[in-house]
Length: 119
Image (tube, rainbow, N blue to C red; front, side, top):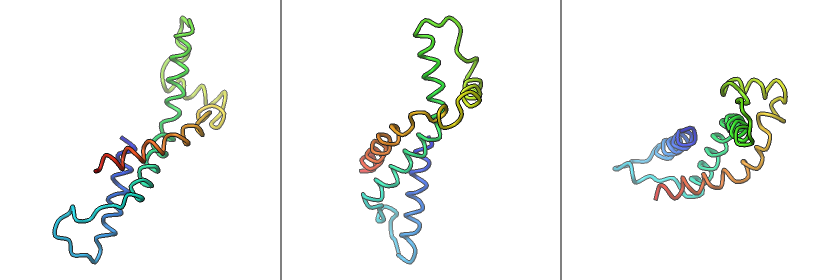
């Protein structure tokens, strides 16, 4: 949801700017160039993945703990997990540990996905 909202907002901003001073008969006459779709899609992907990354950290840890034979849940819930990781490991080494790999692969997939979806 975050990536779609971000991409559509950026696309709308571009189209509003591009339509200034241009008499447009139909809305589909204006189209965002491919290179800008790639940039907007990549940015939308980075933003969405960065915002949700801490949730993925907690989910992954909870799944691995149970699958490794843990009998009790690692955290009582998502908020408890976020709070525990924040207080024991911090933001950089806890909640966002490993996010750089996500930044490397995520924007490319999002950019391609948003660009090809509009054709």
